[in-house]
Image (tube, rainbow, N blue to C red):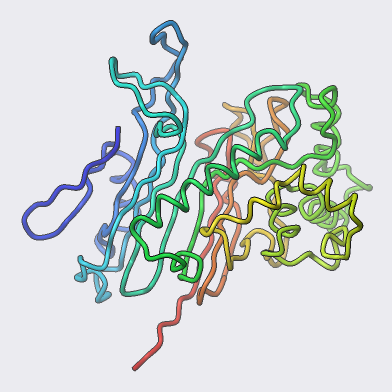
Amino acid sequence: MLLQGETDGTRPRNIATNDEFLDTIKLSLDNEYVVMGDVAIGEPPTGTKQEVNGKMIEWYGFVRLIVLVRASHPLSKDYTSFKTVIAPFGDKQSMYEPHVYPKDASPDKGGVCVVIESLDLVIVCCHLYGTNKYGVPEKTFDAKRRFQLRHMSEMFQYYLPPGRLSNMNKIVLGDFNFRAEMHPDPEDKVKGGRDWQSVQSHLSKDWKGGSKEDKDTGVRRLFHRHDRLNTWMVKSGVWEEDETYGEGAGEEQDTEERENDEVEFGLSEGVPEVLLNTSDAIAEARGEFCYPTFTFKIGDKKVPREYAEKRTPSWTDRVIYGGALTLRDVGVERKVIASDHEPVYATFLLKQATT
């Protein structure tokens, strides 16, 4: 179900359907912060698969974005600056009969957005199409993800003037679901197969004898050469190739290489406006590089957790930013165990022009 805007007579607001989650956040921040934006799409989690119209369906919850502002900040009183936008683009059937979502408009996947007009800032939380079959190369799933990002950008443009989204201050975060892939052949893409084993070998404690420097080099090289979101954005010319760990994707290519890249990454489609003029926080991490945040064994409570064989370990969870924002810190909170992902965090500084 989509959250509908309501009002209490003094300020616009969205009513959260999962108050336990919001209450937990409020408890950790006490009364220093107030909620200025709360927008979500989805349906309540079912816990297990249930049959609906002959299909087994399971819902996992909401794509949700909550924006809190320090109570002492002037923005906490500027209610009119905050606007919310939703962009559902999934394909899952609703649990609520006889409700039927339009094609590519189910809220099991999608993006939610809070625009803060006074800061010229847009914050987007999204969940894109997942890899859900074995024996299929990632380029098949990437095509769906790129379509969803374009669709999301187009829906946001209904509420923002043409061209504005690409040049705003922005933070785009969530489960992008792009994967690391070393071996794309169908026979290598089975559960625990050659692709999984090759990626896992770069993450093993025993890789190259196990010195901290060697491990960090191996993880960085894996990311810059085999993470498919990074490779797509580098080959599209939006992000810069890493001079130390990359493969020279920015070098001049011959005709065959360009044609292969077009097939692999759909370069002629162009980059969705929501990702233009951006950088990837994880790629710019200083110090120890972030390990892949997915997929971990569910129920595994020890830290560090072990990667599950279900899917190839990947950096599915990202924080992308652009505009006048300065990245201050990015990392993974490995002690928070709530799913088969590990949460990513980032902090930014936004300097406002003074008049």
